Length: 178
Ligand SMILES: *[C@@H]1O[C@H](CO)[C@@H](O)[C@H](O)[C@H]1NC(C)=O
Ligand SMILES: *[C@@H]1O[C@H](CO)[C@@H](O)[C@H](O)[C@H]1NC(C)=O
Ligand SMILES: *[C@@H]1O[C@H](CO)[C@@H](O)[C@H](O)[C@H]1NC(C)=O
Ligand SMILES: *[C@@H]1O[C@H](CO)[C@@H](O)[C@H](O)[C@H]1NC(C)=O
Ligand SMILES: CC(=O)N[C@H]1CO[C@H](CO)[C@@H](O)[C@@H]1O
Figure 1: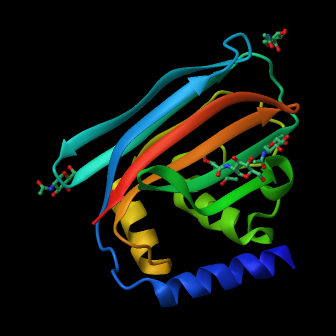
Figure 2 (figure 1 turned 30 degrees about the horizontal axis):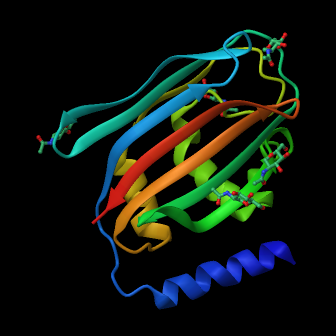
């Protein structure tokens, strides 16, 4: 039922949006570890190769492996007067949903964006550091403009990563559509 409502929302959005975006630009990424004994970021950055080619790389070192319980809250915010909730605000049991990514429409969509660029491409347990390597804008561009249409503007993709019910890390990813 809930999934159905989300689907309706997306369909409505597709009809309501008049300005359709064609270009995605990564503007910033911020990674924060809330307990550096548990996990810490070795790096987390955007790199520009040239004007049209930018990519995201991050590496998180996990110090208490194996990790067998992971939940992720993620939400998409759009900047109006400050960032306001825009479309998603969901929590997924990563261990469960990574076993069957297609079981969650929204998660499946985001997972599709990064799985080829990350070693988090399997289900629990995680007994190694997590890497997202060179996730390019062009790829996101194609995914977003090809599958879902969003209005122009600045966006924040906010994610809180929980292990064993405790918030361990936050990754904020900023981008703009024009
Ligand atoms: C940080 O994580 C370590 C390892 O899991 C744990 O022993 C410690 O209690 C945590 N510290 C806080 C402040 O939660
Ligand atoms: C930017 O760099 C990429 C990767 O090296 C290259 O394929 C592309 O042609 C470059 N674009 C411009 C406009 O120089
Ligand atoms: C997501 O929803 C919860 C309530 O379900 C709320 O507390 C939280 O602030 C929301 N987060 C964002 C970023 O909108
Ligand atoms: C996960 O990604 C790694 C390299 O990024 C690759 O070697 C491995 O085969 C992938 N595993 C799955 C299940 O796709
Ligand atoms: C907004 C939201 O859904 N928050 C949840 C994020 O995940 C933690 C851990 O599962 C929940 O306790 C929060 O309610």
